[in-house]
Length: 253
Image 1 (cartoon, rainbow, N blue to C red):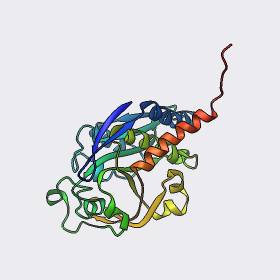
Image 2: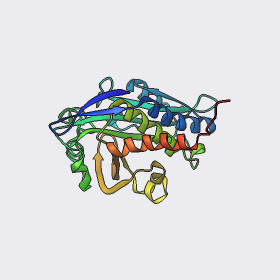
Image 3: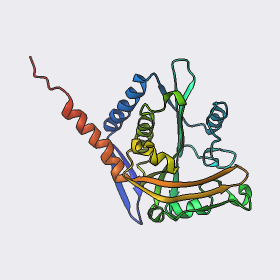
Image 4: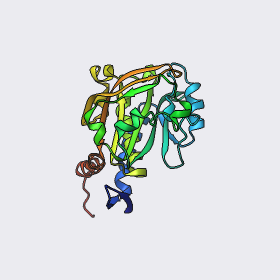
């Protein structure tokens, strides 16, 4: 096993991650993508990510959260996922990064605009604003893994791709960071149409991010969805136990 040390509220906690559990969890979702004709890869260079997203037809602009010209991401504190089809054309994308909120919380991080800009005093427009009224956002402290910028090409929608890419992102975030929380901001329509149900997030609240970024042309009123670090760990471990129960048993000859 690999032992990771994280810092809780004033105390050190030892978190033990079984790499076999994580690899099996990831393999399940990777296999599901392959069955749909998608080959998944993970990258860490966000300059490359932005160049991919800008060259991807029908995908909207990447938020400054994942753009190194506005919010540089340190090595080991972010990654992105790309899925390509049999013609090597981009079919799905998602990005993730880690926020160290040991001295803050997710609501404050959003409202200060630091979730979008490394230095809001330099990059934010005077009329930029973010209001977070979701009560649970104020309780989200410590290591917060933020998943966003998800995009699925139209011809692959309605095939369960959000569940697959979310599973990959959760597995990678757990292995890299063992976060205290994993969260995302989603549009209301994605709840109404059942897209969020595919994420299998146990918690969601309105008022996650009432956002205006003038120069980016962004106006949102998103819900907050999340799960705790313990729920994430249980999700990975539960999958592994389920797989073992379903596996056939063999007796020695």
